Image (tube, rainbow, N blue to C red; front, side):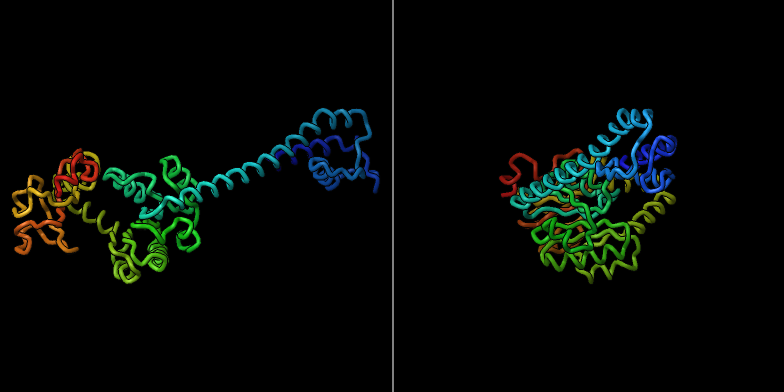
Length: 324
């Protein structure tokens, strides 16, 4: 806008150059017009170039003066806006840091990041415990509109990670567009927080071992997963439809994890109302048919297939009482 106002001012002086006088050589050329427009709009006004004809003076009074005011409004308004936004960010960061602990940091708010966040929220994770980091201003705006804390910047920069309080995060989900960036982010996060559970999405299977060596607890190969789904859909459209249903949250069937209920202890996985796929015991995942988990024990967790509209375990009334 400032450049546009300056261009209009230059055009006015060039068109009516005969109405202005330069005390240096008496003539006003294009360079003189640019100079005059600059010093006039910025209210500097050295007086070496002046309007001398009545028409030029009227133009300065009724056209140039509003342009000058508009120019100043643009500059001052932009400065105040930046200062106000920065002040709000600093105050917001300060308040956020005081209450934020054991939160979830999502690096990248693209398609994968949004889906991950939606799944977390659908499973009972509160929005105010999710923090988004993304280098794109549009993504940061979208995260803010979704009522989540968001930080604009490159997550490979430790300063940005510290602003997001990665050191006290419980979970970090990395969904960068490039695998090399995912490696760098994982290394930085693991250095700042040795205890966080890090989940990373990569494009190529060859980079999975590198991510695990970098400190990732779980690595999901997006291109391979899509390829398998495409292959299943080609071989059996019905099977592909079921797999897509399991991967889609909020409708049809879903895969979920829940603790073993007190009334289920001592029973085999087949006796559980939900369709048990695996049993998690002492941090290890066992298939439902594994003889070592033929009888469920207190503290076990179940990976089940259930209706998607079932209430998340964390939100069930009396869930703690039942578990006890």
